[in-house]
Length: 489
Image 1 (cartoon, rainbow, N blue to C red):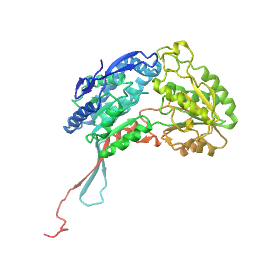
Image 2 (cartoon, rainbow, N blue to C red):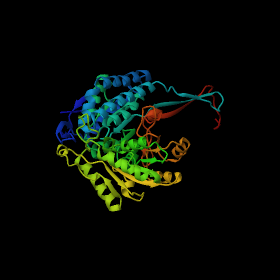
Image 3 (cartoon, helix red, strand yellow):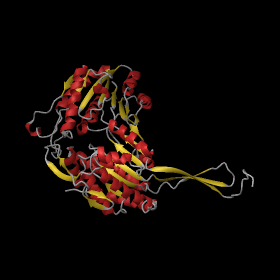
Image 4 (cartoon, rainbow, N blue to C red):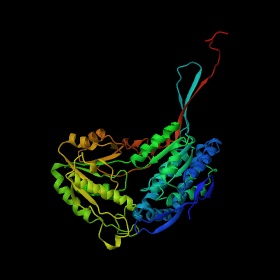
């Protein structure tokens, strides 16, 4: 039985409810965890509020805060194999990917640890005689953090590390279906030794725990990564006390390939862009936009390779892609495939559950490709979040940009071409938070991550990722105070 962590102690849910955690590869129960609700969230928020207001952590010098955050990175590296195995059990992704995630996660903690003491404020020139003026950044306060199921610990790290480095207190709510690595890292944070109430973990559904975090007037910031409709509800609920919000709401990310691109690289990257982690990636390149002259050859090669993708247990070395996260999510993907057929898109490959007997207990779905797609189709516009690729075609540079930008989302996109001037022109015109040139998916702690339009508000990672967890204050000092006699004595 796994408990929640509130005010420096491991506790059961007030209701004593529990939840089974399921392995998506075979539906076996791999753990039982406490299932919290609004009452537990209120308890955690009160602890975080008290811990912030007493100043023990927020007043700690930045260098000392950085040392604590760096220690978390060291403990993650110490226990990285255990963490990777838990992540694969919980999500179904390959162990190779989970191991790579742990390296990235440790790097995120190291990066923000290094920033903790780097912003001592800025002295600015004052136009008023005999005065001094400076701008400082201070922690925002109590931070509610809601993380998704597809990258449970990676997304948690993007929130935990900058929040603690900046001097905040946190109430963390992981996805109720993939909490195991977040639980483990909370144990590592307890081992690190933060003051009581600085770190709090509440497990449970978004409708209760998440809603309480968004609604509470004692929470100063809500950071959420997940679906667009949930993000909109959080944004509305958070308006009650006009709390700061940071939202990463996914994308429908275009991958533009020109005829002059390196063919082998572009095909390889197009497959990786959409089928990595079974397409359950917010930045998945689910829209392939091909120049007309290479369309047929490119599509034929994609078909051959997609049919050869090895589905299986994430712990098997030859597995290239694991299952979807749940039966409900697979049904959602299947529904979108049917919508695509009804809209007139041509199903090229996939579009079904695999027939392999060894995969029947898991939530598997075949890599799926649709051709003859247009931007008025739901299958093109809406985020499927599964192994489904749509293919559009273009003839001119201007048309490629118009197609790519025809979306409510603006998280990420890519362009493949040997003409670097053209690539830079297109990158400048795409309305997206990240644009890759001749690559897809790379990210790192030093570069900000987030989207335009309905992909969200704010940024994670990089210096902007730390700034999300701070408030800016201007301090003005009159060095020669005297009466101004505006109102006569």
